[in-house]
Length: 329
Image (cartoon, rainbow, N blue to C red):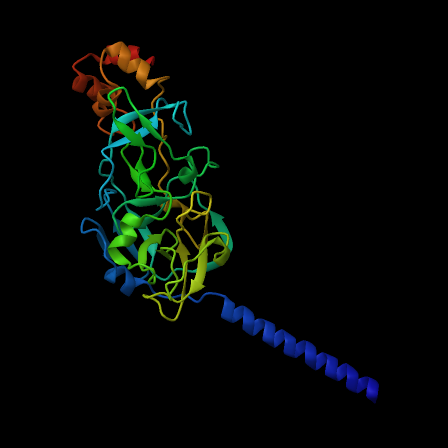
């Protein structure tokens, strides 16, 4: 009799533990929440266009942020340079140009226990009107924020690879983007040591925030999951929502490394080649052959992708064959 009682008690304990475990799992799994109201209330750049449907929103930013950019940037000398440094970069006038972005993003994002790695290119759109990239440069392993540097050209013009807003443009295409937390964005919506507000949307639909929790406490990588995400209350979602946090760090945790939501991979805009996307060995050498500055050579392409050699040649007042010869193609 005692043996049966012990077995029944053990069975009851196992069932009770199972119920408790299930309850904890349910509570710890982020629930689906509509983001429509918060998207509409966010302080978006007035140039961003929105079209809402029953389950998604089409966002069309032109890629030009509503905050100051640097007048000059340090860019790779040639396509062969994947990740530039002070010895393999040149100074050019800011090549940022309007883009034709169109993202269809779910308005009731679904949390997934399986993560999807973010690839090079756009992984989210920020309220400034520019896009967010993952932490890495073209080699997909060097954090852009850790690779920042400044150079000065022969004319005494100084330029940085990444600007003070944690962003920079793709040279030939002119696509400006961020690799981390931009204080140029947060300064427009947050107050010092106060809660972070929504500053963007990832392509899986989950919102993006700065590095302060609902109480204004500084968040670090230790507070976040492997994707830089966390489930907690925010000013826009006081009952809690899974969201991504950008950190002001110069390492792999500066941006979103993976999606924890169901994401349509077709929405990710591929990252253009930082070297300009042209088969040219050296911009500096090509410019020297043409007797012009590197800045003028880059500007002649007008940010076209793929490069329009005929138009660039016309802009330079030379023939296309002369341009091709100088470029070595």
